[in-house]
Length: 386
Ligand code: ADP
Image (tube, rainbow, N blue to C red; front, side, top):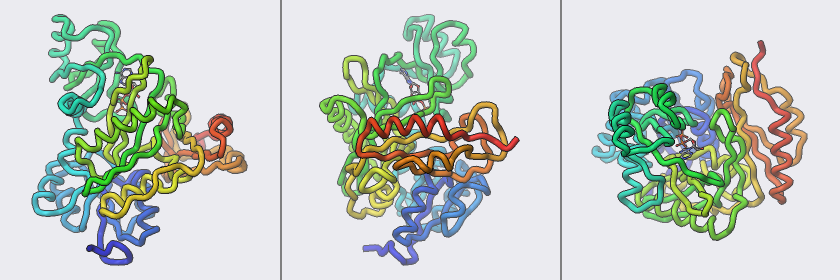
């Protein structure tokens, strides 16, 4: 048994953004030593780790050399060099989640094929290697307009996703590998956070419901628990568990899903790490997703995933029209409201829709929490000095 606590054990984290920073609060709680690699010398995680290294996460040598220096490697971002992770695993280094999982998830086409292969319900799709192929697919009726176009690589927060209903929309798309997916008529977007240990112990958090910003395609509110039929919720949980199992995932896996008009659950995509849809857990759950991820990858007993209170999370994104040194306008006003906790990620510069922080609202009554969340949303503003 390795002693992780107050010892020389070193946990390496690839990526130093806000997810890493929140994970580091938990390693501090346990007195676990941490090394972080990130290209940005001002990365949010820098203030909270024991050792910070600046470097390119997609560079083989950089990731490999970083990995050699630590006892166990995890990541808080998907865009890392998978070949370096695979080599480290070959040499006996523990990498959780595994390079195999990450390789599938990095490409939306591969990810969707994986669901098909394992009978995980997902929207129908066709994969195309480039734009000419896609155009040919439309001409030959392999896909019909309208459809949802997704770049297989590099997309996040709705970037790399387009609703294509006409030739004019098609003309605007970049020439990259992509999938054309059927348009899902959904009544809700849901997510389930699943945690799994190397030995296969598995737990799920309650289903959350997401409300998206109409223009930016970013989540505006995450509501826990989702206000949906318990049978639908149980189905979503069962499906999310099976996704974690087929990946043989280790750590947190966030499973994003659609609830269609007839209550079918379709898996949209997954994130193999702590996720925005689980931030509410810091204040609302017995064990938050970051602590849970640490417990899972270190093969420690998992904590309880139940909620203590209803929780709602509001993303703090940069307001339109402001770029520059950030100001959180009216933050004092929201801090006077009951059960409200702001989280500031520590990015010095704001720009429109950049994720700068989030606010959690907890309350015994979910409807009350929702009212306060709306007040929070209408009060605080992420703007710049000039
Ligand atoms: P990203 O990886 O950028 O978050 P997603 O695949 O989650 O991309 O898509 C972003 C958003 O686009 C989703 O949250 C959803 O609102 C919408 N969307 C994605 N796929 C479909 C689909 N097949 N039908 C309808 N809407 C979709």
